[in-house]
Each structure stands twice: as structure tokens, then as C-alpha cells.
Length: 219
Image (cartoon, rainbow, N blue to C red; front, side):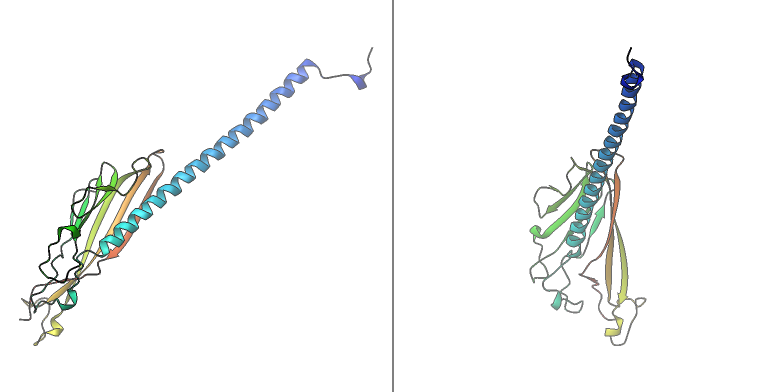
């Protein structure tokens, strides 16, 4: 008969020990899986934020040059040499918006170079850009980002140039020259293509550097 000091584990004790070990291992595996999932979601969110930030910066930088004219230094209402490209056309809804504009690198006031046209649009949850008459190019990767909102809101402030006239006139005076100072709010919303629960919004405000001079002359 063996002494209690040399007695081994009973079958029940071994089974209880194995069950406790499995519980600990399962908890560790669950914690690891949760950590890996959280890390993957974080990486997807950071990637989405980066892609939207880059897209917003590209739109803002490009839109800022709209209506550029190399001969702007000589252009005045009285000279009859107004910028040939001044309109910025925003159309569509937030899920299919498009903005078109143009600029010219020539000094000729009547320049209408088609290669200097530019546009951005939201098409099938993909943000796209186009230069001139070329084909549309993807600005965001639809396999990574699903853009659900593209909105450009214009803000216009008119400033009278009547103090340059003799006699002085104001905006209420018919024919008084003025300049339109334009700015645009850009808003983008998107979701991760791999995880619909991951979403992000991006906003940017940009002032057009090339102000719109009216064709009116001093009365």
C-alpha cells in the first residue's frame, strides 16, 4: 500500500485540470482575436481617413487655380479684357455631384483652350477627376473606399470697386463695377469597402485665388 506522499492525480482531478486549462486557453485566444480584429479595424479606419484627406487636398488645390488667366494683370472692366474663364459649375446631387471649371495659361483674353478644362465627379461611389478632354481617372480606389457623398457649397461675397470711380458709386448704383470673391466648402463622406461599419467625413474650405471681375464700368 502506497503512502499519501506518493499518491498521483486521480482521473477526476486530471479532467478538472484539463478543463481549466482549456478555459484559460480559450480566453487567451479570444483576447488575441479581439486584439487582432481591433487592430485591423484601426488600420482600415486610418487608411480611409488618409485616402479621404488626400482626395480632399487634391480637389482643394486644383479648384483653387480655377479661372486662372496669365493676362489677369492687364484685365480690367474698362479695358474690356476680362478673364475668359470665370464660371465654376457645380451640378448633380451629393451622391453624383460634379464640378467643372477652366483656366488658361495664355495671356489672350479670348483664350478657349480645351486642354485647360478640369472636372471632378462622384460616379458609382468612386471619386474621379479629368483634365481637358481626357478620360476620367480614379481619384479613390473603389476596392478600398466607397465614397457616398461629394458636396461642394459655393460662397460669394461681392465687393464694390466704386471707390475707383469718379464720382464714387456703390453696389446699389447701376453699372458700378464690383468684384466677386468666391470660396467653396468641400465635403466628402466614405465607408471602407471591406467593412461597412467604418466611415469617415472630410471637410475643406478653399478660396478661389482668381476673383471674378464684373463687366460693368464706372457710371
